Structure formats: C-alpha cells, structure tokens
Amino acid sequence: MTSTVPVSVAPVTAPPAAPDAPARTRSGWPGVIALMVAVFTLVTSEFLPASLLPLMAADLGVTEGVAGQVVTATALVGMVAGPSMGLLFPRLDRRRLIIGLLALAVVSNLLSAIAPTYAIVVVSRLLLGVALAGTWAMALAVASTLVPADKVGRAMAVVNLGVSAATVAAVPLGALISSLYGWRAVFWAVAIATAAAVVLFVVAMPSVPAAASEGVRTLLAVLRRRVMILGLIGLAVMIAGHFGSYTFIRTAAEGMPEMTPALIAILLAVYGLGGLFGNVIAGLLADHHLGVVLVAVPSLLAVSILGFSLSDGSVVLAFAAIAVWGLGFGAIPTTSQTWASRAEPTRVEAAGGLFVANFQLAIALGAALGGVLLDGFGVHTVFLVGAVAVLAGGALFASTRRLLPR
Image (cartoon, rainbow, N blue to C red):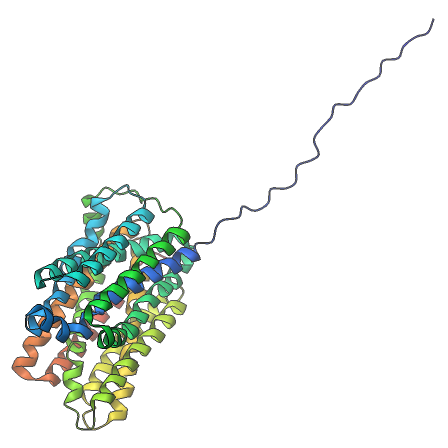
C-alpha cells in the first residue's frame, strides 16, 4: 500500500506592481498659443478703422468724425460686456464660450464687409465689442488654468503678443489691402483670419470648466477688497493719462519742424516695436519680480511722455522717447493681468472682467479729457497732465504690492 503525500500548490501571484509612474498631464501651452491668435485677430479687427476712416466715410456718406465713432461704440459696449460674461454664462465651459465669441467676431467682420449703411457698420462694431471684451475677460482665467501659478505672467505675455502684433500690423496691413482692393476687402480678410483662429481654438484648447461663482455677489466681493479698489483706481488713472496723451501723438509730431509724414509713420512703427519688447520683458519679470515692474512701468511711461513733449527741436529725442513710451505701455497688459491674478487667485474670472471694464472706461475718459485740454490749452498741456496722471496713478497702483498675498 502506498501512501500519497499531499502536494501543496503555491498560489499564483501577480508580479509586484511597479511604482506608480508620475501622471503625465497635457501641456496647456498650445491653448495659450490659440488664445494669442484669437486675441490677435480680435485686436486687429478693433484697430482697422484707424486706416480706413476716409474710405469708409466717403462710401457710407458720413463725415470722418462720425465714422470714427465706430471705435467709441466698440469701447463702450466692451466696458459692459467684459464683466457681464461670467454673469450671463456662469456654467458654460470657457472653451465653448470663447469659440462662440470668436464666431460672433466673424459675423461682425462679415457684416462690416457687406454693410450698405453706416448704421449697419455701427451694429457690427457693437458685436465686435462684445466678442473682444468677452474674450479679454475670460483670457486671464483661462490662461491661469492652462499653466502653473508661477507661469501665469509668462502665459499672459504670450497672449499679449497678439495685442502687440496687432498694434504693429493692423494699420499698415489695412492701408495696404484697402489701397489695392477697397476697404470692404479688409473686413473680408480679417473675417477669414478670425475663422482660422476659431479652427485653431477648437483643435488646441482643452476644456476649461467655469469657475465656481455666485454671480454679482462675486463681483461685489472682489470690489470690496482694498487691494482691488486701490489697484483699479490707480490703473484707471494711469491708463487715462497714457491714452489722453497717445491719442494726440500725431498732432504733437506734426508740430515738430523736422518731422515729415514719412518720419511720423516710422515713429509710430517704433512705438509698436517698443510695445512688443515691453510685453516680452514684462512676461519674463512679472511672475517673480512683480513689485519691481509695478514701480518701473509708470516711471518709464511718465518720463517718456514728458520727453516726447519736450523734444520739439530734436527728432532723435522724439524717437528715443517714443521707443521708451512703447516699451512702458507694452508692459502694462501683462503686468496688470498678473497683478489681478495675484490679488484674486480664487476669483480670477471676476477680476479679469473688472480689469477689462476698467481699462475700457479709462480709454474713453482719457481720450475725452485729452481732447478738452487740447482745445483749451494746447498739446503740451495735454502731455504734461498725462505724465502727471501716469505717475500719480502708477504710484497708487504700485502701492498695492504690499497688499498682495504672497
């Protein structure tokens, strides 16, 4: 008789699990690039009338002064539309919202291209104001979800490259195309460019869920904070001082004996290039040296405005001053938006909407007050008051650096 020995079978076990690999997250920089392209097309659309007013006025049967009010219409509706986007669409994915706003800009430009009357052009520019301000109001909040917190300033510098590029390119491109094919062709061209921006946005921008918000309560809560009150007032005074002077920069340049029309065109191009460099420099510094930038930017602006005003007998001084002026103003959008994200890190969308409204209001007030000073006291007074306003507003804005959370 044989005995059987039980055989134990070892349970089959899975091989030891490998340590978890670090999760790979999709880079948000393609979305930042898409936002930059969108902003470029929108700001180009906003600036186009500056090179088309005589042609538009003649074709539509209005004066150039009346035709110029399409710019005012865009700014005024933008002042309301900016902070309203979060209130009207509290839960809509921000990717879808901006796609809708860009589509509205396409419609606006197409409407301008075929408009049979001046009234239709005004309506089209009102639509553009909604698209432009709405996108701007969302830009800071969207960018802050695409990149780490310590890269927001750099991301906004990339987005604001669209503004700088539009500042440099919009007017000369509009003038060139209109001289060859008429002013309506310019709006056809920018409508096509905006449609291309929509396609890029669809491809490159990930979903951006809406931030939690209590609507008007959130806006009011942001406005009650001391850092926001002081910062927005200071920023408004500084922007008004800048635009009150910049609006009449051609008037001042034409009063310089050696400044020919060709030199004036180059002068404005130098300003645009200065703005391009200012935006890049601000993007490199704002994330880690925001306090320094808050002090340096208004100082550069005030000195350059005064320098340009005092450069009557020197073309070289005028060009040096305008380059520094462009450098200083080019740094403002990135600097101020980085400041807003620091002041309200948990309510960036509301802060972005208030920033847009504040900016648009300052533009309108600055240009209006500058016109009153020009008629009553002359261009030198305009620049002197503008420089003082920039310095005073900048000092108030910079003082908030001590109130920012670390």
